[in-house]
Length: 341
Image (cartoon, rainbow, N blue to C red; front, side, top):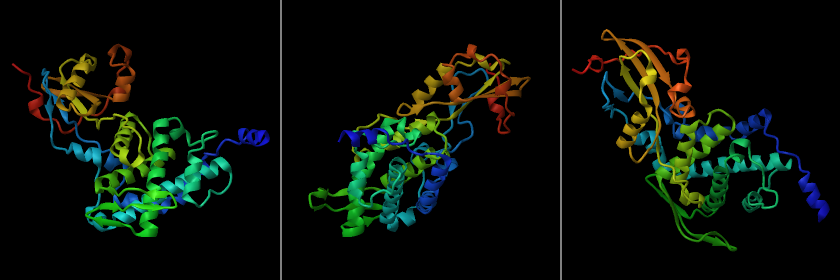
């Protein structure tokens, strides 16, 4: 027994090199492609950028809020409803298969051998207490994410088996209802409903995690909050407590100023204004300052939320402005340049 434990202690670290990542991409290519096609999963579509949507005219402390975009669509994304009305079971099974292949890849990179075929064995492996499997650093460094991935796997596996093997389910208008199934002490003890919205969120979450793992997407603060928010919408499917993450809102604020130094802008006041307008959201913003002289914009600066927050909203930490200069936008409205009397 002591020798076995020693051998376990000496187990090699998993291989998550570029070659391993390439292998993961190859083995999940078809399933990922299907889900990306069904849900139009592209970073630009699920994390779109909009024209400056909050504007402070010259010499005005009162912002204008543009409502020409659908905030909810930013949060939930879009999906192809016609296909999902009839194809929801296929999408669910494909989503679980993608997760299952990822878990098998984790097992093989940790144990240096082929993962077991049986779901229960893979589930038990994930729940190992003495020497749990090590996930890629992106996930391993975020216990909240690792725990929920394991929770997804344990809860969704029996649903997949019931759909595939027993056909104990119904599907209508994109919603799946899986009937109870109990066999040899295992299975589903009560019916489970997965709405079309939850199915879309689940599919996007699994696909996006793989994109973060292989660095196709980078996880900035906005992306991380979006991921946490989506996990909170799926608490029933992973069985863990809410992370208490509100829907993130990330607009670009435009300030017209007659002062040649953009650092006079009151950052805290802007954030306060946004929070008053969107009290249910977790708000952040990028800042664009347009310098006005003689009734025209003569210079422009843009500051990212990451930089502003890292500097703790203190302008005195930003000494040089050259790196923040940007081109003057071409959508300037004259009404925003008129100085108040």
